[in-house]
Length: 378
Ligand code: F6R
Image 1 (tube, helix red, strand yellow):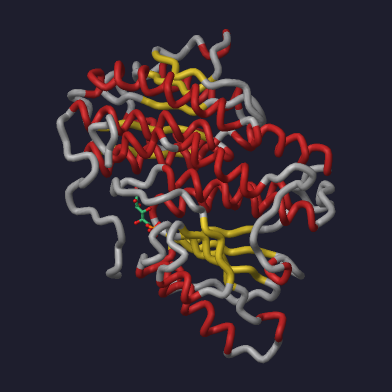
Image 2 (image 1 turned 135 degrees about the vertical axis):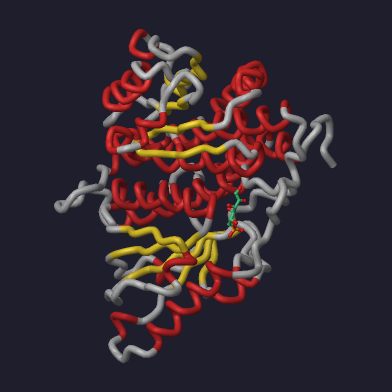
């Protein structure tokens, strides 16, 4: 049922404030920092984390790694499942392996997890025993049968092939997990880097609780802005998405969304890498979408955007409205938010931009060519 929406993808983008509201109600109860339905053994003695995933799920994992490192001080590595399965890194002890797949059926992710489990079973030292956790929207899936511990993102059925609300659900699962680890690790700044104080963690949780209303306004506003922008991309062949830090994976996600449903070539880059090659691509025909959130890398991202402007690129900013962001030709304005929470907001214009561009081109948004909702082949 698409209700009044022309496409499921559009409907599912609009369902995201509700996805967050449900998650907040379930997992951020009054009087506790965070409550996840996980056994204590998932957290005990974990010293490092590796995450295996594909596509959009891998982008959620990259945001998750940033959170686990910066909030909980846990070293975290993210792998393409399809690469990991044929070239896994040397085994390390006390490692939690997380598989992220919204469908729970992605062949590469399942095979990588099974391989990791098998090779760890062969080691006699219990420090190397397999510890597997799955994050999915389908607890009844093959993933659910493979791993002993599961976080169900509970985003409801997603019909559009392009992942939108399940991506947001995966992000939320990682916020929960990073908070839970941070709390158990004392919530203090880790001596070797990363970590936040208990008061800072509580402040983050307060902002998460307030998020559904913020997100609702953002979805409505950016829906209008992106619909108006779509015609600018009528003849566009290439788009560059730039972000840094926790928003670098969101730039990657913006590019992936645009590629898969509008068939426009797009690249996501950490903005600081532009000068090492890709800047040669820029001219007036290549729009640049730049995610600039106040915090650790705000000025850096703005100066990277300035470099693109000097090459005549059309600049679209996902950034707060302020004097610093007047360099953008078009602004998709962001409300004030902690930088660590910003991916939950910055992903919305990524989704809406690609949706409206594809719809404007008259494409089959919900069933893009060559793609399927579950990729059950290698
Ligand atoms: C992008 C998309 C794909 C999937 C990828 C992994 O919108 O849908 O990139 O994210 O095929 O799928 P899951 O999460 O089911 O493992």
